[in-house]
Length: 423
Image 1 (cartoon, rainbow, N blue to C red):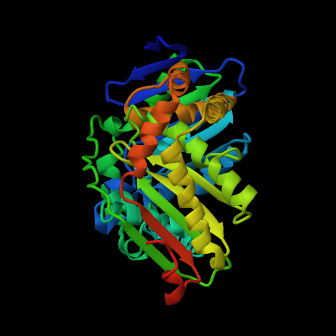
Image 2: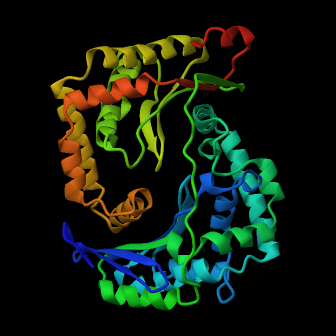
Image 3: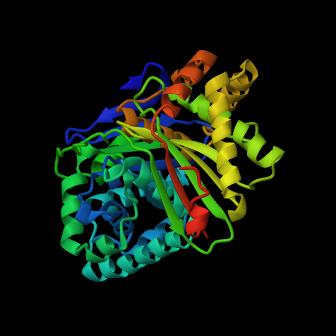
């Protein structure tokens, strides 16, 4: 089935329920293939926190027919790359290869996603790798403060958990837990195979059907419960760091909300780039920080807006005050026509520049289906950005910042210093 809004995009659903979507790029010399699974950190029971990420690591350890070294050598020998990532609502496995090697990529992904060996010795080896990854995250305060913020914004809801899992859960998860998680969720109804590059859709579908022939039909999608209302929360973690790492967070529109376009524009004006108010005020005018930015994170039923800044501990209070003053001015005065033009121009331009390679296009297809269960065409995306008016931005800003605010901080704060942080 060809997308009427974009003839280069075609979709097919196999009898098993596995969905395939491709975008043809005749001028490309590469192809990027992604297997997207609609399960992530928020879909794990608390005792299995980190199972999605654990499984992502294990699938590349080998199958019944291929060792991990075999997989790595097959990809390296053609100059390609194969990798994966885990998010809160999906897990993705991808291979980028010269277009002549598309069927190799399909075969490798099909093998690891239908017949992983999950050997006990490999489970234990990879467990130690993940423990080291968790320790690395704990040693990176600029990352840890974002974990604290998500916990503050969502509380006990699964969206507030660290995707890596907790040390205790990762150390406790057994081989049978991983195998059960795989058997339940890695099914056709939960998966989408997306590809972009120089390829023929029908030939690609045949290759996928052959590679995933061993997969049993059907499957179920995770049942998700939306998070409850937020609260004003302050989370502070003491660490002898050279900088104070600060995050502010508010609930914001979901991936299916019509206001997502206005939220994207509002964020760009607030802290999305060098022309943003936060960058200009905090860094350029006052010299309070090297890194300062804002970023919206959107999920199928919720989202949150983050403001991050790293600054000298003695200037933490001043920096937070300036950040909140920028927010207050935006809410009170709105945005200018010039700011709107710069923000929409950036978002449109960055979208189009991101489509220069097959990886960017494949990612757009996969994320679109994972988030909204349909392809959002480039033209529709651009039209959504262009349709945003200053009144839309003002309305979204007032809605977001009228809600509860969470504050997360990591740094060398003692009891007296904590009192200086705005509560």
